Each structure stands twice: as C-alpha cells, then as structure tokens.
Image (cartoon, rainbow, N blue to C red; front, side, top):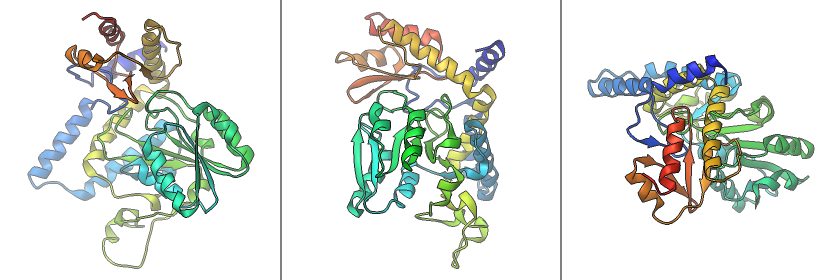
Length: 354
C-alpha cells in the first residue's frame, strides 16, 4: 500500500465510531457517518410527511453506478434487488430438467436453497469440497454456484480455475460476492452471474442486493416476479397491463427498500474513494497478522475462522470485542475501519489476557 493509499484509508476511518472492537463485518458492516446522516434525514422527512418516493430513484441510480465502478462493470449490466436469494432463484429458474448444479460443501443457504428447490423439477444438485469444485465440472454440468469467499470459513474460492473449467465444459459460473465485494476484486468480465448482498463489506443497511454478469448470460434470464420498478417507465407502470418491462438488465430490477439504498449510496462512494486494492491490502494484512499470532498459516482472506474453547464468546463480549460463532468456530473479519491494535487486543483476550 503506497502513501496515498494509507492517507485515503486513514481519512475513511474517521467515518466510523464503533464503541467496541468490531470484528464482525462478515455478519454486518459498520455504518459510516455519511450513511447515518442520510438515513437520519430520511427518517425525519418521513416522520414530517415530506418524503418523496420518486426522489429515491436518483439515489438507486447513483448506487447502481457506484457499485459498477467498484466492481469493474457497466451500470447497464447491474440489476438491483433486496436479497441474493431472489437473484439466485431467477438464475435457478432457467435450468432445465436433467441439469447438474455443483455447489461447495457448507455453502451459505441463500445460494443453496434456491437451487435445491429446483430438484423437484429434475435438476440434480451435488455438493463437493470447495477445492475440488474445478475438477468436478464435467460435460453434464450446467451451473457452478459458489461464494467467492466462504461465509463460515473465509476460504477464497479458486475463481480462476473455475472460470477455466466452466469454459472448457460449457457450464455457467455464478459467484456470490456478499463476503468479498468491497475488499476482494473479482474478474466480473469472465463470470456469468454475480450476486451480492450489500450489508456486509459494502457497509449498507440490510435490504439491498445486486445482480450482474456477462451480457450473454444476463440475456438468458427472465424476471420471476416483475413489479412496477422493472417497468420501462416505473412511475407509469403502477396499474394494469399490458406488460411493459424495461429493456436490458433493468427488467430484472426488484422494487427497492428505500432506506437501504439511501444508506448504501454514501457507503459505496466511500469505498470507491479508498479503492478496493487499498482496502484489500489493509484487510488481508490485519487478518494475516492475527493468523500468525495464533500459529495459523496466512491465507490473505479478511475472514478468519478457528476453533476456540467453550466460553470464548462470553469472554470476548466482556472484553468489548464483537465477533461471531459460525459452524462451531469463532469467526472474525477485518475491514477498513480496523487497526493493528484491534488485532492485538483480540490475541490478548484469546491468550488469556484482558
């Protein structure tokens, strides 16, 4: 990380006011001051009867554009929604009977359940170890669906190998970047579908999600439950037929939860100001500092999972450290607002100190 990157990072850290040692971004990110200010203004406007729903359209458009910039794609390839499972379900719906879907063992259920729900329609779903996914892709594989970073363990998927394997066998690849976007770059130009919830590393409120991908793959999708916001002219699509959907990817839009987008837009601006490369270097360095202190191999992932004795979560809470237990293991995540002091405090508590 160069001097300019460090300066941007330090400036961004002034946007946060955690009252504890917050290491639980993999559950929910902290809210920046700018996002909190926007949300507070929205609540005041709503309480006073001054809220204008149409005014949020420009906020959603700004967030769509900002996300596209952050992940390196075009805004017209980005659909907006509320949850990743909705978009996974849209992708699952195009799979014909007899299709094989490959999943990583222990994958987050927002990816797993929409695809397994297609089993009653003849879709075959197989779960295999994450590191075996590329080797398991075959001529009968229609889709590989996997998180770019595993929620429970923080393991980074072998994306490049998956891109190659899917291309070799004519399979589609879907990545869930909910635990990656904001700190880990993904080659979106070569991934068919990418879904992302924004309330973790993108620091938005819960209730916003994105779908993007290649133009060819997105063109195959049809909206499962289109509403007024998917209309060619949303505010002229409120009543009656005929069906008049937007052209392109926006036909897949789902009506926005307004506060979620009002809070998300400033967060995306902040992440773009710092830059994903700078955030990645910072987050990975902190996580690997923690791994080294605990005798673990460095992996470069911002999420760390490790076994801990019973009662550890209570000791951490008493020490003012926010973390989580996932799949029976302690899970901590390090993001742009964390520091080396946070790492050292965690190590001290886990080592029996205070």
